[in-house]
Image 1 (tube, helix red, strand yellow):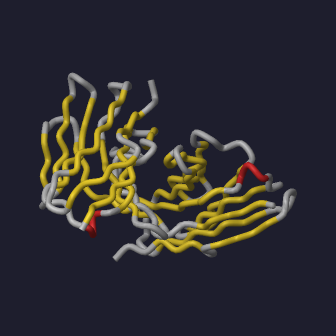
Image 2 (cartoon, one colour):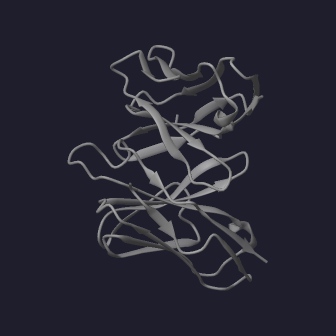
Length: 118
Length: 110
């Protein structure tokens, strides 16, 4: 079974803090993704990575950065947390079949981290 | 051009009934249409997906109907069960883009 784990299920931080969300997958997937999920807005892509040290912006990258130093690990960084970043953060991974595109394979999601910024 | 409109927002169906969730897209470049199921406290999981070269795909009680000319696709859950109560997301994607619908909260009455 594919397993995607996220470092915390719940996190409470203060405005202005630097926040690290960690994600690890155990299936040697090429692609990894970070989404945020908000009620009534669905899932929105923040950043994704298709290889170690490679990253691409998604639809809402402002206020976030990412790091992928190892294939199995993808980190989301909030440089200076703000209250509007209170949300559920979901990590996902997928195989990187050559030529199929980054988004045309099954994505396997972690359980999510619910972040509250006070 | 990049929206995926999902309806309804919430749905209540009697046990044994048919649940139908609809999605519409605008960008004809989309070529992969997955449906994800999410239970409370869990991440979404792929339920079923379709590519535009077929008009229907069935897996057990779950069927995707795809209408390329209308740019619409729908999820049908036959013989709906209380265990199907969850939030369902449609999505549309192509090589370097994915857009999710806003989700439908489905409740199956026992």
